[in-house]
Structure formats: C-alpha cells, structure tokens
Length: 191
Image (cartoon, rainbow, N blue to C red; front, side):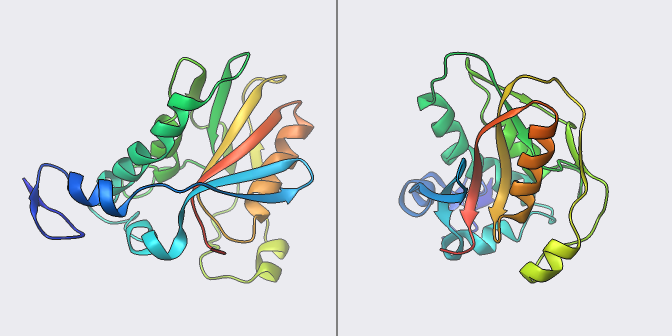
C-alpha cells in the first residue's frame, strides 16, 4: 500500500486511480522539428515536471510506468500501420536500476509495435539538463545504432526541449536506412 504522491490518499499504486483519471489525462500536442519529423507529446511539461524529475529516485520507475500506462499504452492501442513498427528508446541506458526511456518504449508493445532495447546508444554521458541550445549543439550525444535496416520506427524519449537529440537520432537512423515515422515523448518543455 502506498500514499498517492499527488493527493496523499492510500492507494495500491504510487499515483492513485483518482489522480490518474483527473490529473494525468494525456492531451496530445504535436511539434514539428523538421519538414518530415513530428514529435507527439502527451503532457505539458509544467503539469508533470515534478514527476519527471523522479526518474533517478527510488520510486521513479513506478512513476514512469504509471505515466507510460496512461499515455504510451493508450496510444499504442489506437495506432495502426500496414507493417510491423519498432519502438526505439533514445539512449536507454540503465540508471538507478532501470531505464526510464525503456519503460516508455515497452509500454508501446502491441500487435503492431515491437519495442527493442539497447539499439540506439549515446557514446557520451553529458547531461543536457538545463543546458542551452548552443551547448547541446556543441556536444552531440554521438548516437550509435545497432539493429536492422529498412524498418519503420517510432523514437521514444521522456522530454523534448530543443529537439537536438531527436533530430540527431533521426539523422543516425536515416544513415542506416531506417525510416523514422515520428517521435513520442511524455512532455514538451516548450509548452
């Protein structure tokens, strides 16, 4: 038994069903990063920023699973495509005993979407948190891809701020013959 971290009522979940239904209703926004890449975000950053900042805490994995079930899982149930699509978490390295982007990618599992892990990794460990666009451009993630070619993918990340990481991922994947359909994030920090 937990105390809901939002309302403090007792619950079987870290966030009670009442708060999930009333406070965590996803409202999808779409941001276009380039002429051919759209990023769908489920929440305004200001609404869930405190939840997002738990990703390296003891309860972070439970909070991310709850957010994923309320957004990514619901999205995957409505998504249709004429062939198999893979969900790729951007740099799903394990931190604090789990990967927050892997949790989000896994929530997309459906008849159409197959999550794959450890396929799009950063070669540097630079933190982009609260960094400027200039810093991000001068310090790319140096992403490496090691999976199939000639496939359709959905890119997965937790937050979009400047979009540089998602654009870098798209570029790396295009060079490997991979078609990025779009990207999904929990929140857009611009909203």
